[in-house]
Image 1 (spheres, helix red, strand yellow):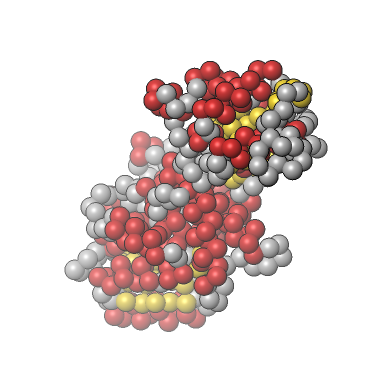
Image 2 (cartoon, rainbow, N blue to C red):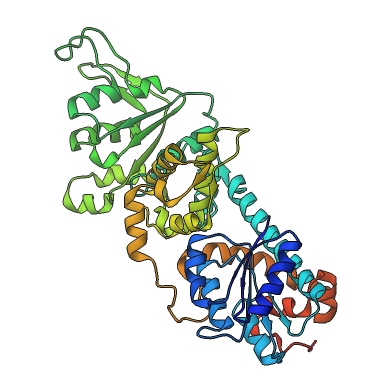
Length: 463
């Protein structure tokens, strides 16, 4: 049942509309005091808001501004007894879906309500589908809706067929190993092994043995010959994570392997040829380490034949919600309904800075799933650190910046606006710029068309 928030300071009009709309099967919350709107929008979810324009102490245009900031995807219909073009255009510019002039025919209002709800539902379905499908730029578990991650995917497609050494850079938790695996799985080595070693997790002596192997008696406890990762990954890919933690002594031996394509086991004299593609990753600037003398410059140039940078999650906001849905589906499994995520939660996810990047987001979603009730994710099931940061950084709803988009809504609105603009331009081109014909073709009112067009398109009634 669609939920409508109805605001009018005239008791008789409010009661009449409330009765009629409920009779049409809508859920209605009707109030006379516009000052209560902000609290309701912050605590309840509505599919549509209808408000009179002339009210005190807060008028309809001011309520429209609040609604656009707090619930940008919710359509708003303005009721006005002053059917002036100026008032209507101002409401359109501020983001009203449409306006209805008093006195109005009830059929006219009901048709406008139906169109607003259908429009909202279509947009919602498009966004949900986009988020759940994750997007066409997908390599295994890599979600790429942002330009930065699309570029990473393009790089993967280009470098995967070659045997070139790759250096992946990025903060901890951004998904560097996923990129490495995607390169391997799209290469000619995909049927061979992918082995990974964390260079920071092993002490120097053990790391050398782990990578190059050892012979019997090479050190205390070496009771037999042991293959290293280079031998075990023969024909496949070796991923060296946190390469910046590799001691200088082993850096020299790795350089020799990359140059000569052969290894010598610890304690051994014989060289063993190896056929391995090396992909390295670091969350530390190797250029800075070179200046400090803690990383070999010649090794750096051997590793970074093709560099790929994975941006932090805070710099690719378009990926946040698709990642949330991706993790939800992975954790919930196929064939089960995903938990409902309220608009408030989506906004919180987008406003949070994710210092731990994708790894932190995955843990947050798992935390939410664990404590969610009634298959719904609410603020109380999110990790406290997210709630604390979002609460501190949340902008005040009465910011006074008319018509401005705050950052948390930018990606969603930009996506929807871009698709609308492309389609409107095509239709206008077919009608040779005739807006009345375009509106008729689109099956929308002329007022709605003008709301979607740039301000320079001219006043209503022009072609």
